[in-house]
Amino acid sequence: MSRLEQIERELRAELRRVYLMHEAAPYLICVHDPVEKRTLYENRSLAAALGYPNDDAAYSGFGGFLSLAHPDDQARAREQLDGSGSAGERAEIACRLRRADGSWRWISRRDIVLDRDDAGAPRQIMSVLHDITEQREAEAEQRRQAEDLSVSKRLVDNALDGITLTSMAGEVIYANVAFKTMSGFGDGAVGRMMTDFYSPESFHQLSAEVVPTLTRDGAWRGVLRIRRPDGSEWMGQTSAFMIAGPSGEPTGMAAFWRDITEQLRYEQEKLAQIQVIEAQQAALRELGTPLIPIADGVIAMPLIGAIDRDRAQQILEALLGALGETQAAVAILDITGVKAVDGEVAAALVRVAQAASLLGAEVVLTGIRPVVAQAMVDLGVELRGLVTCGTLQSGVAYALQRKVRPGRA
Image (cartoon, helix red, strand yellow):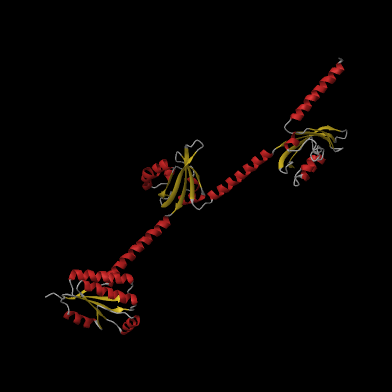
């Protein structure tokens, strides 16, 4: 074998190895002539990945790349095909190609000039294409996560409630704007130990309640007294929970804070007002049902103002209690000062008379004004068991004659 034949043999073998390597490559390798617009070589790796058979005319040929490009990417793809090599030895583009099933895959295409003519125009260009769909999807997911994280951070930073993250050592590693403001430390809140924020009264609560509950349950909710740098204090409604790392071990604590100082002050003031009102109502009840001893065996209860169901019950209880204590034979109810009498009030007066009779006492109703009498007639009230007198004086005179209970000496 001559030397020339040996060189030719070795060259064919080398070309064969290069060909097999290109055919086995996991990406498309294509060599084309940009002047004559024809493909000189093309392997089928990417075509197979896109689901096209070897003889599919839609894919093969110089224009296959353009025919499969996404409509939004065709302008850039055509620009690269028409101008490959004009800006240098290499050019790169990323676009979407249509799969045989109609779906789209992201493809990266890099053009490399292999040969130029005497004028410097590219004569042979090799294109290397590979599927970057997973990479693009991963990048899109990273962008989405980064955007979500950015949105979440903005929400946390601008939340109305205070939010803090604390290390296991007790150092504040994050505080949002609300907590910085309500704590009084501003930006200096970050980097401080949480113990710098608590008033002395809160330390006992921390050791006796907060820390044991966090350790046992992983969360705690309650109210803590917080001290500002200027010495003023505020009441913080707190919701804290432990944060665990990948191994499940606690790595820190997150807490939400709400300043309820004004709310508690309002509730305390409201409670004090309620207590004052209740005390006043109790005093009015006592004043509204006065019991006056007229003589031995005779008591009088002058009634003033409006009588509703609750007050009627109070009158009944007060009168029965007095009758039980004094053993009075006659009880005078004077309604001269009662502005109006309706059916409910009249029925209550009848119940009083019936209850008094069970104790052996007689009830005398005095001070019935003409308008009240007319109202009772219109209501059809039967005042059975009640003795009526026009004035308190006449009622007292009647009672003095009847003060001895039946059966008594």
